[in-house]
Length: 269
Picture 1 (cartoon, one colour):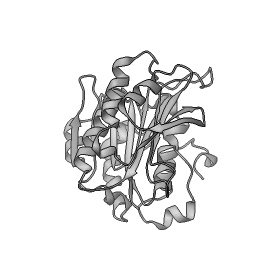
Picture 2: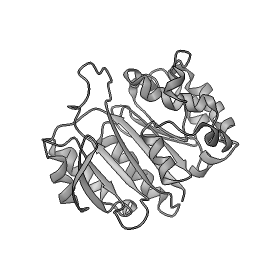
Picture 3: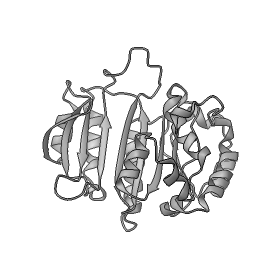
Picture 4: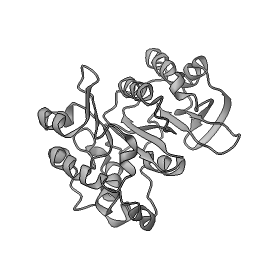
């Protein structure tokens, strides 16, 4: 099953931030997220307090000061096909963390083109609500591959390279976004089918070049958040000719790309 996988790197927010809680609850209970119907609390990697998804439950769980995030998924019946984690608290991070966007939230859901317009709208609004610094979206061949993408996970190198839509440089770019997390307010690892960029990136980029390179460029908020989409069809991200599309995007995004020359092999292989 082809999935759409989206990650958001953003600052933490308070358990007392009722406005953000209400906004997130409204977005996550829209029909385009119907595959996410079970709600739980997360404390580090411990998942607990399962209940059916509801706006009231999301607000209540986001306000739980002792927990760091909420988790939504497709439930225990059958194969897991959808998941979303909204991270709220940075209290588990190392004291020396320098990332301007230490939270990593994500959504992985089945790709259904009939609801894709509504889903894209909801994801853009989710990015705004989270005050996203940077983010990325791609189609993945399975739920597991999509989940791995949003968590910056390493991949089976041989399998990844045989798909034709990935090469070693793209794997390095994907790893760099996590390895150089202190740079994410100004730089990104590399192009993806969908990108969220904020003011620190946009100050270095040519807006006319962005519109010439990306099929969809959306100004999302007054503080400079922009959504970029390379092609109209998310499945293009799985096709062999996508490498040439990524190559063209690199030229436009060059001023904000991370330097990969010092990236250690263990970060991506």
